[in-house]
Length: 142
Image (cartoon, rainbow, N blue to C red; front, side, top):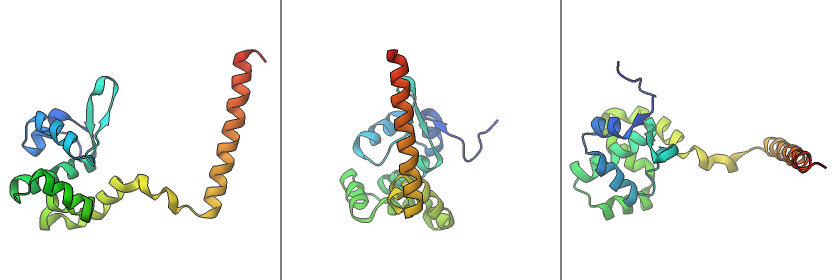
């Protein structure tokens, strides 16, 4: 049974899907800091759909467009991850680009909180700190 489009892929599944050997994915991970699959215990890699999109873009730039590793690094540095992913989507996947970019860059939007949301998070953090202090005291027998 085939996995769904949103399922995580192992390195062997990702390599098969992209048509490259597994060692190439590991090598790209060392050369491109923006390739960051999830790693579980023992270092086992799991690739999210957005990771596959990034890898597909790198593959397209290196193999189809003729970029060098330094060229892809420069493209990423100067034009961002959007251009790397877009290279892998080609002209037929532009509708998916925005959703993939949002998934890949989601951790960067934390600064876009409203003042109310920031206050609620600060209060929750203060509550957690008090709870932790109380638990620490209980563990010490206080």
